[in-house]
Length: 396
Image (tube, rainbow, N blue to C red; front, side, top):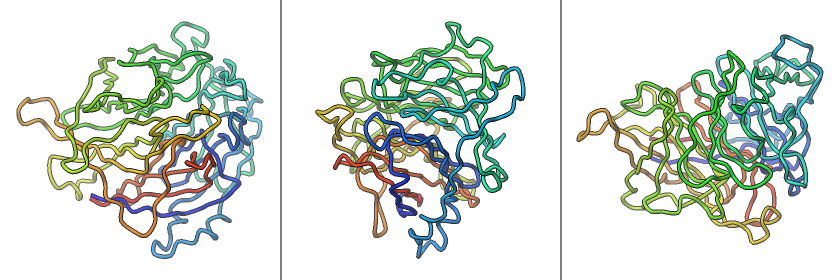
C-alpha cells in the first residue's frame, strides 16, 4: 500500500495554519480563515479550489494554472429563514475552529475557535454553529457567501459545550460532534452532539485519558459494527499523545454513548505511529471491487507535530511527514469483535510534502471510489506557514 503526493497549488494568499478545511462530494476544497502570524486571524472569506479539475492531466499538473483557479467568496449578510436562524450576521475570522461538510444537504458547518492574541475563545454567539450552502450554484454563480447562525433550543443550558478552540469535530447520524479542545484555561475531554434536526445540544460521555487539545477524530465504518463510530488518535496534554506503547486507539459508539479502546498491532517493519498532535486523521472508503480480503483499511493518519516548540504557539516544533493506514477485520477468535493493525504507507513518485502540523484533516472520495488525502497549508519546521495544497492518492 502506498501514497502518491501531488502538489496542486502554492500561493502566498492561502498560506496559513490553524485553519479550517473541508472537501465537498464533488471535490471542491473549502478553505477558511486561520493564521499567517501567530494568534492573528486572517480573512473570513471562503477560498474554493476544484481539486478534480486541478488534477488534470495527472501526469502534468500545472501549479501556475491552478494558482489562478481559486474562487474567493466574501461573507455576505443572509436573510432570515426560521426561528432557529439568526439573520444579518456573519462569522468573524478565527483560528483553531472546525468545519464539517454534510453531503446530504451540500452544507458546510462551522463551530468554535478563538479570535485574537489573548487566546480566549470567541463569545457564545460567534462560537455557535454557522452554516452555508456549498452546492454547485453557490460555488459558481455567487459573488459572496451567505452564512446562517443556528440557535440551539438549549443554547445556554448545561448540555451546551464550553467555548473552546483547537477541538475536533465529526458528523455522524445527523449530529455534529464536538470533542476536546482548549477553553480559556486548561484542556477538555468532553464530547457534545448537536442534533441538526431538533437544534438541540446533548452532553455525551467524556473521553478516556488526559484532557487534550489538537486531537483528531474521524467517523469510520468498522467490520462487525452496524453503525459509524468515531475514532480518536493523538493530541497534546503538556506532551504529545499517546505516551504509551503500543498506542491505544479510542473508539466512541454513538448508539451506546460509550468509549472503548483498541490496540492495533504494529507494522511488521515500521512499528507504530509516533505520538502527535494537530495532525490528520480521515476515513478510508473501500469499494466492493477493490476489496481483496476481510482485512480492509478504514482510516488514514498523517503528519502532525512530533515535539512542541520551546516558544509555545509563537514557534515551530518538530513534525512528522509519514502516512499510516489503519486496517480492520472481523476477529477469528472472538465473534462480534475486530482485529486492527497499522501499516505505514510507502511514498511513491518524485515529490512529497515537507513535515508539518497545525493543519485540518481533510479528504474526499473520487467518482471512481478512491480516497484522496487533502493536505492544506500548515506550520513548517522553519516556523513558516505553507500556502500549498497537496493531494495524496492511495494505492492498495
